[in-house]
Length: 269
Image: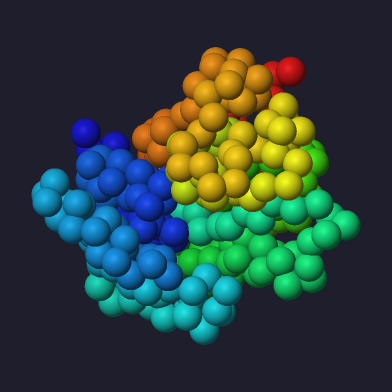
């Protein structure tokens, strides 16, 4: 307990899945939370869960593709809690489709949320983090940012971009002596909606690499997991949240520009 006491953390995509798990874990370790999402109902539930556990959270509807809204969210963190120390850029989407069938709209939508959203967050939050005494930025990438996967070219492109963007920002912050560390987290198969909703078309081929979900499925196929993840099971949001808390805390003070891979062994092959 208390690993991030006294810190203020902003978590995007906090209405469910990894974002909710991260928000709950950070609050349990003493942070005050600013939680954001486009899903207002889920967001309110996350904030209520934090409050019920004795934590403090402020919830804001937030489209991460809007730079103006990012400026407002960061200003809210300052006005409500006096500063900001941790940013978790978690909001993201995945659209499974062959590159030969993917529409430009599907391509640009993933870029807008997964890449532009991270850029805007870093641009607007880091100055406040530095002014608050320093802290940590945690960008959620994916194993798809480390290796290719058929049928997920658009998603891989965005998560690969997040990985290298993270390194470049980490170097800028270090060279500027801003006392802000910037790292990426690379989840494997985690039992969340983003996996359960990933699309169709060639699913059996994708199962051997990254995508274990059949169209319309409401849970992850255990046989596909056994093929994709050497540990043989899907991770939980709490598994990723544990890594996020570590990167948010002073325990990771000598890490920046690094990749924290939490994937059940997927990338060990």
